[in-house]
Length: 310
Image: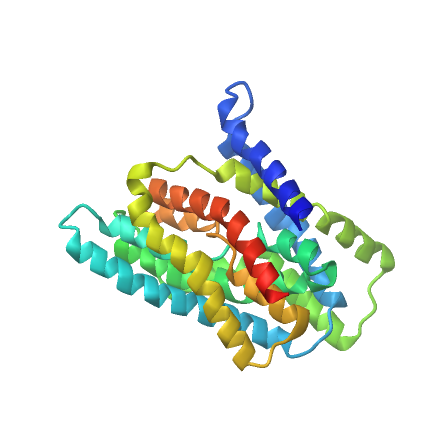
């Protein structure tokens, strides 16, 4: 496990150090290009291959249910904490900051970091768990509920509605690929071996590219903001996996699928939350610092959780 996380940290550090070399291409442009390729090519290929080959069992509904309930429970706890801080701060803690940290506390980096973590710790056969956890639950929740939080707390005049949120979900290529994989799996429809091999090859690029991209997104945290982000860190890295453990256990999930699901809940803050923060003018800088801090701390909390699960 130490070797695995050492490899993660090394690759992520390369991405994080990119910002200190001005002669290199702009990291935001590089990250945008990587995200576009992963979202439209590599991740759909991986989603199709994994779910076409996956066993069709109760995991298909249990994992997304655990994901959604964990996100909602953590969001509720974060709302109570940050609403109180907002009232007590007398203007020092803005609504834009509150909105940013609500996103930071509740949404897990289920794919960009969760997928490589689960495949390397639990096994490639359980790559389906991050896909189910993310594409069928928290990403749709981010594009609907997360966007509503942005509209409520942000400083922009941009408003959201259910129709535009549902259209955003409908435009996700990995979601369609996952649904097609499940459908063909259920129908036992044959797929050419060369296509499956191509999807597997494309999917193998997802993990290292994602970890590097997370590094590109990291920014150095300011000590002045640590007091604000500390509750979000505790909720994301400790409270969230505890909720997932209890919900997954109550729904009868067991074995490696159970471990993979709890690991997903323990992932640091989702990088995609930055899209919502930028769009609605939440405190993007504070959210970026939360992402950086939660990612760094997760290299301590995830190994500890993995040992506890075993």
